[in-house]
Length: 119
Image (cartoon, rainbow, N blue to C red; front, side, top):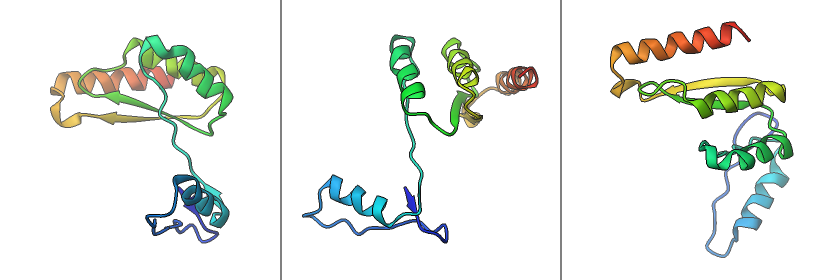
C-alpha cells in the first residue's frame, strides 16, 4: 500500500492493459511512504524461509498471529524469539476469539501476558 504526504492511500484504477509491474510502479512513484506486508511461513518445515525473510527483508515490525483456541504453539515461540533476537518490534493479534472456549481463551491471554512481561 502506498500513501501520499497527507497519509491518504494511493488508489489506482487498474486498467486491463496495465500489468502488475506498471500498477505497483505507479503506486511507488506517487507515494511518500509505502507499507508492505510479508506473510512468512508458520510451519517448522519452512523455518529457514522465515529466517531468510526476517534477516534479508529487514521488516520494521513483526506481527505474531495467535489463535485464541490453540494458544502459543512451539513455532509461534520460535518466531517470537527470532524477532526478539533481531530486535524487531513485535505486536500480537489474537484471532478466533469467537470459537475459543472461555477457559482456553483466558489461558491463551494469561500465557501471552506472562511471556511479554518477561521480555
